[in-house]
Image 1 (tube, rainbow, N blue to C red):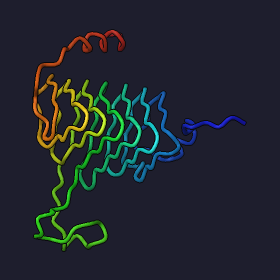
Image 2 (cartoon, helix red, strand yellow; image 1 turned 120 degrees about the vertical axis):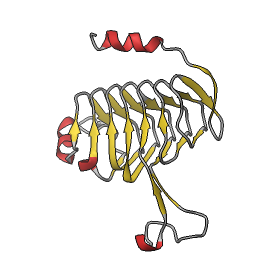
Image 3 (cartoon, one colour; image 1 turned 90 degrees about the horizontal axis):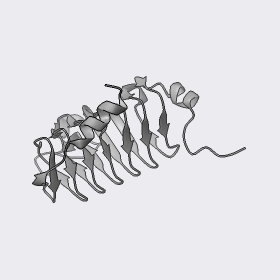
Image 4 (cartoon, rainbow, N blue to C red; image 1 turned 180 degrees about the vertical axis):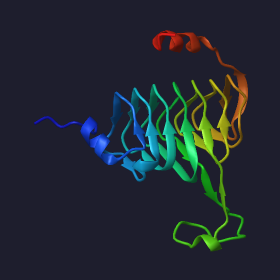
Length: 187
């Protein structure tokens, strides 16, 4: 018998995802804590050692690189169609207050913690380079490209190329891919 590094369609259906499209490949080494809160479109690949926890919506034609972490907490994370991430990207839709005004970490009861929670949205055609970090409340505009090791701590305008920590816009990004996507979708 040959080893299959991806869950079979049957195994994925049995996990109980909120919704699951066609042609979905998820590595067996992924940790999926809340499948009932996760929606996945069609033509999606999720690579090794990715962690998904909370309300997460992944569109179609998405690649999520290895070692990604998507922590929605009591908020949500949305990755729209034709977007994706390289390896080692982390999304935090929830964060503790580290100022000392409250206790922090998940073993402390909520009444002693101060958390900031806000949805994260990666709009269509966006891409995040290796090591990117996205903080609560960020909406990455359509077509944005983020270089390696970006700290994305505030929302961005569409079709920009961003670099650095914190991420800053350095130039415009081409939109050629929009027409290609329309052809692919038969529009």
